[in-house]
Image 1 (tube, rainbow, N blue to C red):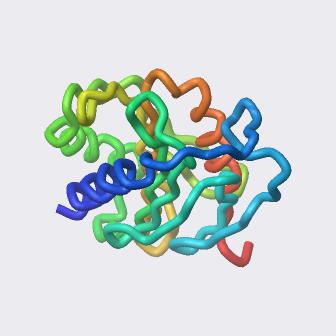
Image 2: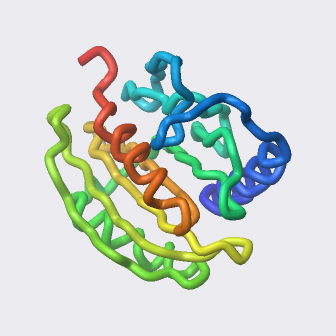
Length: 183
């Protein structure tokens, strides 16, 4: 239910924010030029917010949104901090999320699944898949990060398939910027 609410919020916010346009010069990664990086915190982690992106609370999580709607979609990153009372391995957590995504994402198709050690010293699982929303073909990452103490940081990164080459490096830099708060 929380995921459905979050998706509705993201879609609603994309429609509202998409009515404005940006005149800020941007580099090839969609980052406004001449701006410094901004560190933020959420769920026991710090990260670098992509330049020019907005941040707001949504559905119990934190939503970061690209400045513009492109190819009928506003690229976004949604963070949610959750309990994992079963203390599943990340491999199992990724496997468990697939049926849920298959049920609620139109035209869901898994592309890849992997678990790695992040440079910050924690485990990170990434599921890459395609789906469709409001008639727009999307590529998304569902990322699950072991936050310790039976907690997980979930990160959903979403872009229109037609804009993926532009936003995938932004998402990658975001993931690379993650570190435990106070670390």
